[in-house]
Image (cartoon, rainbow, N blue to C red; front, side, top):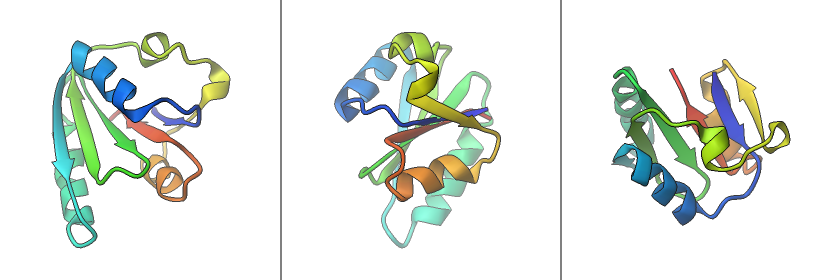
Length: 106
């Protein structure tokens, strides 16, 4: 189940908190390589205990490896995000500016 974060959290804080608890790898893209890099990113999420992050206004996908309770780590409530099984929705919502970030959990 993927989480679409609508609550604003400072991107640096988001990344640093996750990096302290998990191993991080980033996948940088540009307008030409976005879809190719996205496929590579999604493939990397097939590893056990991995999840992804895609944030607004950042041309990167992030893969984290580790076990963390996202709700607890960022003090999230049910009003701070929506959940979906649609893999494209977190990416689309972030790209449209309707979400701050999307957590991709395969």
